[in-house]
Length: 262
Image (cartoon, rainbow, N blue to C red; front, side):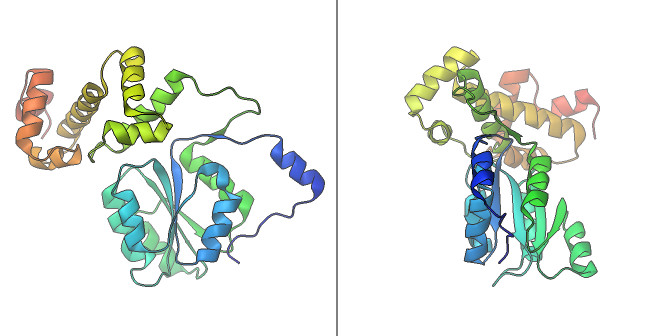
């Protein structure tokens, strides 16, 4: 068994239900492991974090290459086919900001060193201890459990979730329909809500996020304009240049020169 499930007496069950841990989180958890029993136990034990499951490297990549809210990945080392350590650099390339925890039943110095070299953020041994793992999740996701009886999220809180979703997936093609599914409302409803609460349309917000991220990359990295265009979800550098100049009055190269970066 991969997860040491806590003992549940009648009194402890009632105490567990009382907090009503509904998450306000900076993302969901993805568990990548080819052990279906472990995945089911993990998902049950940590249900409040919205655990998404993948049984292989291919399944994990298919999930992560679509717009998503995943902020933390638990990655098993030993899997059939592509191993966790082989998959690790591919996951890191997909999203440098996403947190990745390597976990394994075969702990060794070599595995730990390989995990660090692959830029894993943490390391966890099986069998999984629930409280240790919960503390680790909350540390990496900056998870804050809601109080019992907390009212339904306000329009501002729901839109902040959408804005975070767009920022986290800015390298991908995020549609209004993707964001609407996040809140379980229609795209038309979200569009009206966005304009009323945010003061601009959804498409205009996406452009602003892309331009802000492009500015950051132009000022702090030596990446080419074509590379940055890809980083922020444009098909080519011409599309980025057109939108960038419309928003700032400068081309990306002109902004880079003005900012004094390399």
